[in-house]
Length: 273
Image (cartoon, rainbow, N blue to C red; front, side, top):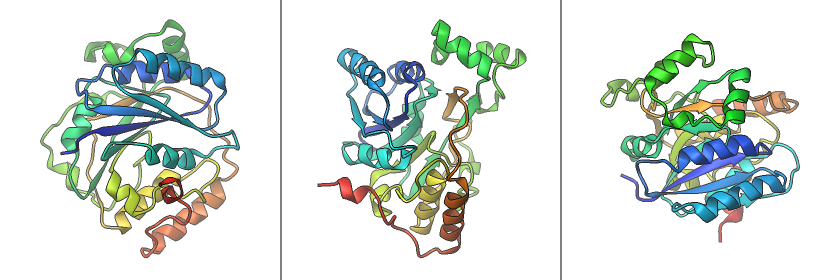
C-alpha cells in the first residue's frame, strides 16, 4: 500500500473549475496526500486561486507552471512529478470534481505492478455553467441527487457511482490501454520514472496519456480497473485545438506496434536533480 499520494491536478485558464476541483479534493477521508497543481501556462488569476487555497489548507498544495506555448500537458505533468514527494501518483484534470472517497479508494486499489484508471461522468454545458455560477458542491451530494440530475438530462450516466469493492473483473484486461486517461489515472512513481514519464514529443492535444499507458504496458505494468470505485465528475468544456491530432496519432500507432519502445525520448528525467 502506498505512503504519501501525490495528486497531480492539470489546469489551464479555468479558475472557476479549478476552484470546484480543489474544494472537492480538500474534503477527502484519507488525509495522507499532497496536491500539486500542474499549470500549463495560465494567467495570474489561476495562481491567485492556488495561493488562496494553499494558505487555508491543512493539505500541502504546490503550484508548478510554465509559460503558455500551446497545449503541453505532458510537459507540465512531468515538471509536477519531478517535485512531488509521494510514492504513488494520481493524475486528475482541473475540471473534474471528486468525491470524498477518491484518495481513499485509489489507495485501496493500489497494487504493485499495476496502474489504475478510473472513470467519469460528464456534465452538460448548461449544467456545468449552473454548477460553477451557483457554486454547487457536487462532491457533497448523495446518490439521490445524481439520480435527479440524470433524469433531468444534466449528466450522461449513473453507473460509475456503483461501488463494487471485490470484483475480479478488475484484472480481466491487463494489457488494455484504451480509455485510460489522465483525467483519472493512478501510477506508481517508480513505474513512471521507469518509462521516463510523459513523452514531450507529443505536443498539442492528443494521445500523450495513451502513449504513457502503452509504454507502461510494454515495461511490464498491468491494468487494474478502477471502474465502479473511483468516479469523477467531469465538467463540460469546448474541445481543445486538435491541429496536432493526426501527427500524434501516427506516433501513437508506431508505439503500439513497437514494444521495444519503453522510455520516452524527452521525459521527466530532465527535471530531476
